[in-house]
Image (cartoon, rainbow, N blue to C red):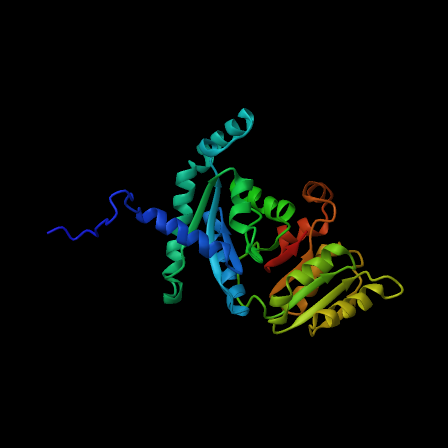
Length: 299
């Protein structure tokens, strides 16, 4: 006797299980509050841990997705496709890169029974298109800024193309307790204000908030605007002003964060753009390269 499910409609083709799985994963991803966007297996675990903590803090939904460039699925200049194909020598083929991320995800899932229902969505091809597909509707995306080329390109697309609220994992191991004490690097400009407003749900769930004003103006405008913004958003927090002295602003922020046992930082990111900050050593790039805490940012 054949136990396979019957196909009652002879004109209707059999449904493929893989298609159902992919559709379910995409629906979860699109409607999630927090997305762990995985591109490099080395950073998969901290991204997943941070995303789990961020979703739990607001009683929201978490999703997981992999994005990767695949020259066989791209419409691009021949030079760009050749460059992507050269990556296979150092990083493996697109399928091999996906398999390594998928194994890291499955290993992480084994840590808690509550993770069993999580699905791994995937998009390979043109990386910018994949980032838009996976992350466009999500309120908060956790993604690494360092790692393989997929990771670096996806982070750039999230920040500068999608203008997402992004959490970059720390340079060291993630210590947990994401929202135990959030330190906000404040300067009264559109980038910082937009980052705080976009992160309001998470800031409201934090155990402690401190707004840090480095090198305030003589009229105290940094501190006064910080207090006004907290009041407008209905957030409780302390406002602290310090001088950087002989240190860079980035060094001053990290020194302060260490002194108050911060668990994550929030900033408005990249005033001068990624490449100029890389060349000039500006605050965002310094924090991305040196912060021992997760860094929440928005451009």
